[in-house]
Image 1 (cartoon, rainbow, N blue to C red):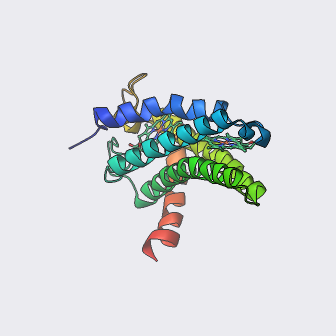
Image 2: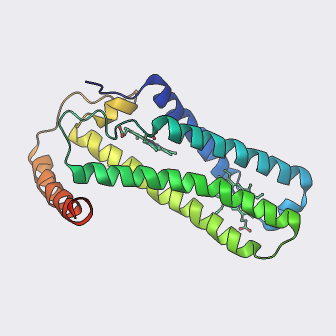
Length: 189
Ligand code: HEM
Ligand code: HEM
């Protein structure tokens, strides 16, 4: 049984983080900065490279099972939540450069409506913070429970065994109810 992501999947996952962080920290502070042609060209080039990397990653990962490292078979509701969060991560990461390029197009061609494009761009950045934070929190929670997912992607601070504490048993009862709700609402009907 396959229980870890490939070396390439791990490499892409971890090297993408500095690229994302760079994109977020170098953000354009002000629309007026785009009047500088070399600044604008650099932003466009960065956005195109970022977009290509996200798309290549998406197509490489799309047929890989979600939560591949789990020791036990996971409820469909659990997989549904994880897949939804991963899809939202990709959506925000595609929207960021796309709306950035839209802003560049509007500014270069002198069209109106740049404020709307900037608002969607800012929304995409905020969405990426929220869904990535959810992803990392869920991963740490899973690490705490010792489900095996962590070891499939993270090369450090490896899990050794399932956490069988009372707290985890109680949390798993709540989780089961949530998964059942999700399955009834989104999967079975
Ligand atoms: C910019 C930050 C991050 C982004 C954009 C990101 C994105 C993703 C995505 C989209 C996946 C699904 C597999 C794929 O398509 O590559 C994934 C898997 C995973 N990530 Fe992250 N991640 C980030 C940070 C982290 C961090 C900091 C951790 C650990 C604390 C982490 C742990 C994991 C684990 C364990 C998996 C495997 C889940 C599975 O098997 O389905 N990620 N990540
Ligand atoms: C992958 C590429 C990009 C990333 C990751 C990125 C990231 C960001 C972030 C995080 C913000 C701040 C959002 C907020 O305040 O919530 C921002 C704002 C902005 N970005 Fe980008 N951006 C990218 C590409 C571009 C491109 C190509 C352009 C246009 C050439 C652009 C133009 C702007 C503008 C005009 C703002 C708003 C500045 C203001 O508040 O007046 N971005 N960007």
